[in-house]
Length: 64
Image (tube, rainbow, N blue to C red):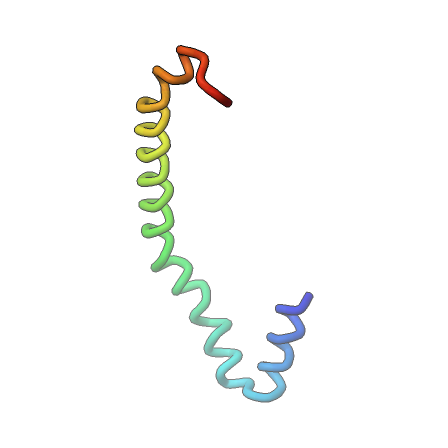
């Protein structure tokens, strides 16, 4: 709700900038999408490595 009110304030005070932001937001989102997917992949690899390293401790009954 606050974001919507801030956008309305921006629209009334500086409508060209608000329209530019409205047009550029999807483009910026599309440009950043591959970096998000890469981040998800890197995070998955690190979680896999962590699970492999922690496996002996889990098998031997380490703390939870």
